[in-house]
Image 1 (cartoon, rainbow, N blue to C red):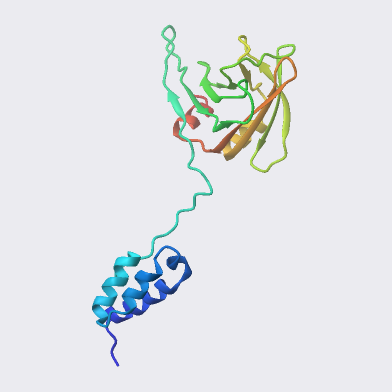
Image 2 (spheres, rainbow, N blue to C red; image 1 turned 90 degrees about the vertical axis):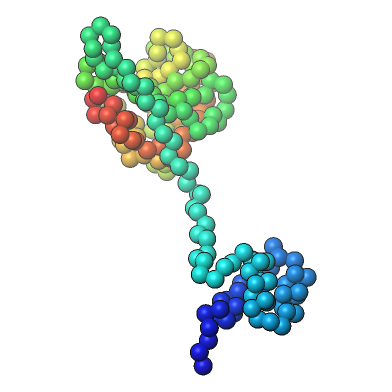
Length: 210
């Protein structure tokens, strides 16, 4: 016996309406009212109105929101007005501070005008350092934490990655989540989180030496 697509859709809708995932959103009285309609076409229309399912529609796919979108790098193009060298920069704000106003706020890379770049982490507060060094601890994704001593800035608001330190750059190129914790000149610790870091064309331009 040939069964119409409409009747197949009716059976499909009945199974949907009977499921707990839909029933919890549809009043039982409305379901009963639809079931009591004798005309199958009208009954189908009633179910469609309740469930929002139309024949031929594909079920909506639930987006995976477990991983946030990569935050875009802010790129600031700049040229030295005297010698014409590239001094552009790119930075990422921290996703959130984990404690304190002196927590790391941004990660920045900038062309040094000599075919290379500088990388530092800064704050709007004051971090200072001991003997011109800042005690740093960071972790990429689920890797083991790494402890290093970075160079203090002249204004006490940033820590510069020393040349020759490769672990941080390796993690940056691979991307992912980053937690950074540093100590100020008093020995107090402050930390921040960057989620789902991904290098884009502009960031790679700086990492490759501008």
